[in-house]
Length: 433
Image 1: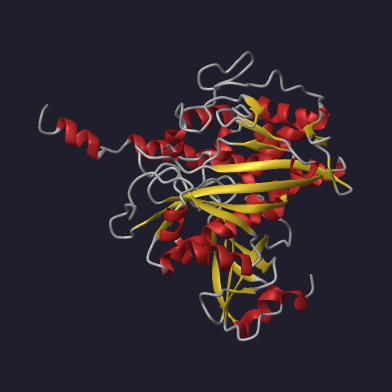
Image 2 (image 1 turned 120 degrees about the vertical axis):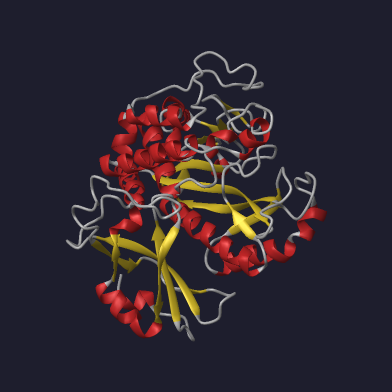
């Protein structure tokens, strides 16, 4: 792209430019408009450690970047045209891309994994479309608790009560080019869901990274803490990340035949099903995320599939040809969308190349009767790590460097949680044992 493609909106004095890190958290810098032309020309230097830190910004030695090589620099360049942030006059936002000092890709960059799989799909003649649904909580920043009470899922009265913050989220993100289709209260106090319109899979993943950061900023402006943490409250609903996939060719949905899922769609679904358990780490990366995986919570616990069935792991939606798709339902709202989509697309394309069949669909309660050939999903992070280490598909889809650092982070999180004494333990045992 040329410099004119990154022209600043009138009145811009600052550009907020960032990229998704290991956990899909948007990190970067604020750059004065006076330095923007130089940034477009030469990039903006920062440590590759940005791609090798956990959610708390802790850093550790990895095979690619470590203390021995001094945590060297990479450069950020603008990837998207800057757009004005309506709630912050004079500030524009743009997504960045990573470039190594050798002007090549950075092997730790999560976005590169998805790019590789989409290039594979393109070589097969397909464009991958993806729709995303994310749940999150809006909490009081002081108490870290919801300000409302009771479960009022889809309640328009509850929606009106939250409109002072959800209205600006919908409006401002639409103005910034993230097409929001709808929002609604979800199945817990303080929990909401916002749906982003389906689009090219890379753009869909980019929008998730931007969406989560911008939602946090808007929530803060309106006096809330927005959290995409998978399971903030053990007795309330967890926050999921549902992904809807279809393959397109020459403007036609290749999953559809007269509004029904065709052989190509079934083969893609079969690939997803075969690899769903082994790729669990891509969608659930913390010990907390596995607290969502409980029966009768609308979070799947196995790799079943079925038609318009919310108890299964893979839900097929039919209707008009343009709407036929398969939805994966087990990922957590806080996962890295680039890793999740890359693994899913790799699995689905494998299914097409290998001519796989998904088996019989589940037409009833997948929590009670999963059916023949179903496989349980990992219920702990340790089990997901073990599956990932043995996964040829995850190695191929993410690359050795990305998979290794994702596993290393998971092992660190397991160790951190297991070496804590919890308040529950003190409450139960300190005064009685």
